[in-house]
Image: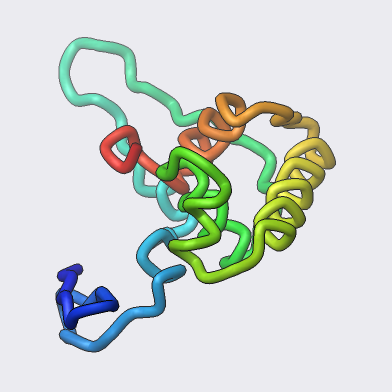
Length: 130
């Protein structure tokens, strides 16, 4: 990913193709949570192998994942609005639906900190992303 500044606007370019990217795609995950869990391997050596925990999938849409990722990386919802070019009401709607989906699978996430934990558990973000 590469940013180019052309005066009033900044365009993000895909590092592989060099094509312009929509701002919401900057925060979209590159792999699903189930893919991350399936690729986890045990620690070699004398330690017991670490078995990844299985968590119920809340079934988040690509857009919900993008909004969640942006919100976790930004300091405020207004900043998310500016980054993704959406209204504050839209951000709030996405976040309330995300929370409802997590609660629906028995993994309630009423706070931003608990959403960070759920996103880390599901492989939607890494500590380096935050």
